View 1 (cartoon, one colour):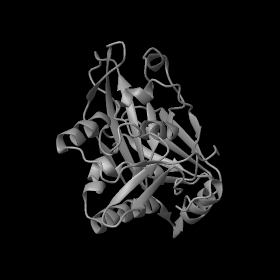
View 2 (tube, rainbow, N blue to C red):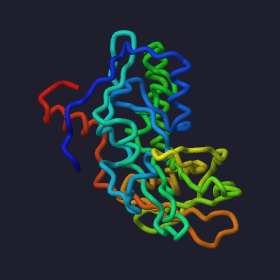
View 3 (spheres, rainbow, N blue to C red):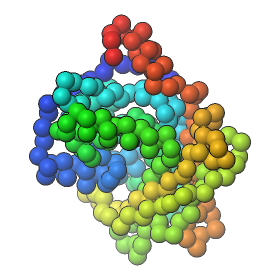
Amino acid sequence: MSAVLPFAVVPVMTRFSAAFRLLLASAVLLPLLTSCSTSKLDGYDVSDIARFTLPYERDVPSHPDSLRFVRVIEEDQTVGVATERSFESLARDWSVSRRDIGPASRALQVVDYATFWGMDLSLLSLEVEMGISDLSKDRALELVEKRKNDVRSQIQIDVYWFARPTASTVPGPNAKGEIRVDDGTRYRATRAEYGPIRDSFLPDGSRVLYRRCTFYFDRIQDDKDILAESETLRLDVRRFADPIEDTFIWSWEEVVDEAADRTARKTADGSKR
């Protein structure tokens, strides 16, 4: 794991208009959303991640349940967000390219990739998605707890497929997703959501098309949490009418729960979190 750096606290009283929130949210699609400080939680286009050299097997910074980089800060009447990472960089840390990239994909300036939604990323998305710093403390904490419970009860993975602007379609609809953890047992997606085809513009002005597909999996299978004792997760996606599976792999170190994370931070910087 990387060393824990000092937190940058997003000011609790920061305010942005509804139009500005919508602009940032549309840049990365729901639920890939940014938060209220443009210095730490910048809005970005999904191709910004797709242009990086992403590994096909990602050693992520922490267990999916761990709050390593994000903190929810309670004030007297409001709730703020503290983070030491930008949303884009954290999303990149949880993103992998598909394992078998064909010649057509290599010719593009972007790669198909998938983002695994762990606890850090899920809580960091709440500010612009819900505007929790503008809400009452009770309502904000209710949303935070719901988001934590969502992460603990289901696995969410977004898959982004890219195509040339001349393409007649982009993969996505009717794709089937399965995951497997350390013991190799396969689990099918309980549901999937397929977004529309959208434009993305690269720094050189060229255009690509993309589609986001979100797969959800129950974490409790056969009366056990399949992530509780696991250290790897593999996603296989079979596109409609295509016999070849797209494969994405994540791995992490042992479980670090929230209480242990807080203790580790307190020891590291001598402060009270």
